[in-house]
Amino acid sequence: MENQYDVIVIGAGVVGNAIARELSKTCVSIAVIEKELDVSMGTSSRNSGVIHSGIHYKPGTLRATLNVLGNSLMADLCQDLKVKIDYIGKLTVAQDEEEVKSLYMLKDQGETNGVPGLAILDPDAMGKIQPNVGGIKALHSPSTGIICPYSFTIALAENAHANGCRFYLGHEVTSIQKKDGRFEIEAGGKKLTSRILINSAGLYSAEICRMLGINEYTIYPCRGEYLILDKRLKGALNLLVYPAPHVGKAGLGIHLTNTVSGNILIGPSNEYRQDPEDYACTADIMARLRKEGHILLPELKTTDFIRSFSGLRPKQTPPEIGGFKDFVIESREDVKGFINLVGIESPGLTSSPAIALMIRDMVEKLLPLTPKTDFNGRRSGMAGHFHELSDEEKADLVAQNPDYGEVVCRCEQITKKEVLDAIENPLGVRTINSIKYRSRAMMGRCQGGFCLPRIVQILEKEFGYRPEDYLLKNRTSPLFFGKMRQDIK
Ligand SMILES: Cc1cc2nc3c(=O)[nH]c(=O)nc-3n(C[C@H](O)[C@H](O)[C@H](O)COP(=O)(O)OP(=O)(O)OC[C@H]3O[C@@H](n4cnc5c(N)ncnc54)[C@H](O)[C@@H]3O)c2cc1C
Figure: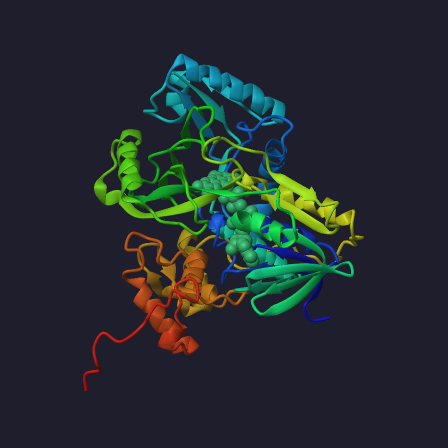
């Protein structure tokens, strides 16, 4: 029946979507409810995009186990979903003897967790992997990788959708009742019901718990700000370079991170905030990131900073304690059918496929799961971008569809066909940011200065958009809000 499901997932971040896709391999009916107009609008699009190896987490914790398993599942999953992943490796660098001790501790810990290929390197060996790294020793973890976090999250959602999962985007869950063995959920003016309810609401997970009378959790948002560098510096780093960790710090320290698109990130900082939507980038932190960026990458020029962004860690530890707590992933005995995920901070992106398997096991204990015989885990469409193809492949595609022959975004070399595909995405999302995250148009050096007007024109001419239809990311961010001058006759 309409609005009645076996399983409802609250939150369309990387974790909620990985769970939805995993469950879409079975015959249960599933819906994902998301308050924003698109998937991946929270922490899942606002992070470093690193597929961690698993050296940082205490053996036996969920973070350690799920990180290592998640890392090992990523290669096949990304191939099926046509998402680019690069296992480029990482050096964790020690500057003094005290930090060298922490490298040996990380190596032991990583090996206990099952991380493959760990080695302590001296400066000569470090230099062969990455020239000009300072430091007296480094831990090399070859299984560390990079991924585009929003492409991965969107791909999981699209594949879950293709396999029958329903998405309620722009529907904020505002109340939950349990009646006669079913959850009754109010979201965006709709009433939905389910036998099983999965809380994957990230920064709002404690709030969802409170709707069911579970008051034992608090989330402390902790902001990490980043600067994005121009692709001019692509190739400056062969792999990730992190500082050795210090006990009690909330993150892994400011570092340079390669991205699969060729930009380098500087960040993230660490600052506790009250508001779980406070994504501001502040002058102080930006100045600090610029300064540290120049130290870490001496060839950096002021003109290389093209944009800033920030993400919020859903921490369970308050500022006065700092550090980390393990993920909470539980099937509640007191509220039968409620599967609860709280405090899924880093390495949540890496762990997401493994978390999905764990949740599938929990669901199976509550509801018989029959595998779906026609599940198709392979996503359709092109892997990567048109500009990455060979000349021959490009010519073939242009012959099939001339829209491949028209470049809309000059900085990122994105064609009109790729923009049209992004506009006509399977989830039916039509914000400017949804086009940007799916096509990469507007993500280059000019940040949409050239291509945004062209995309506005395509939406008007080919999709009948009126000025009020253009939203940047949500209903409170209109692109146009009045006329600058009267029409000239
Ligand atoms: C600065 C930073 C760097 C990081 N770097 C890495 C990294 O390199 N590698 C790694 O593995 N991990 C990293 N992480 C962690 C990773 O990003 C998170 O663990 C992961 O994205 C969490 O995904 P999620 O789906 O649980 O949460 P989210 O992405 O936050 O998704 C939760 C969703 O729930 C929705 N929601 C909330 N309340 C409601 C409601 N009432 N009704 C409907 N919908 C609701 C939200 O809108 C949101 O879309 C980093 C995190 C940060 C902040």
